Image 1: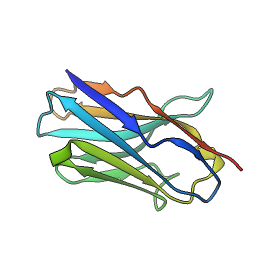
Image 2: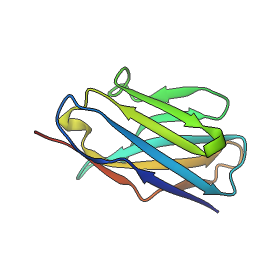
Image 3: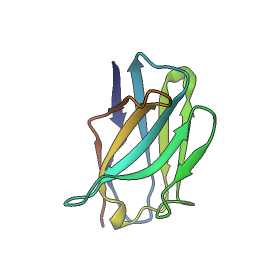
Length: 117
C-alpha cells in the first residue's frame, strides 16, 4: 500500500503562483512514476505533469512553460510549481503514484486550486 498526501492548494489571483506538494509513504519502489492530474468541475480528470524515476518528465500542452514538476526521492515527495496561473487552471489537483512494471497505482485525495480575482 502507498499513501499520498497533497498540500499547497488554495485561492490565488490570475497571474499568481502556487506550489503543490505530494508526500508518499508506504511501499515505495524505485521504478515509479509520480504525477499530477486535475479535474475541473464537471469535467474529466486529465494529466498535468508526470515525473518518472528515471528522470524524464512530460507535461500537458496547456501547462508547458508555466508549470514545473520536480521530485525529491529522499523525501518521497513530488512538487508542482505553478506560475502564471489562469482561471482555467482551477480544479482539484490529484497526485498519482504508479509502479512502472506492475501498473499498480494509487491516488491522493486531492487539493483544490482556485484561480480567481
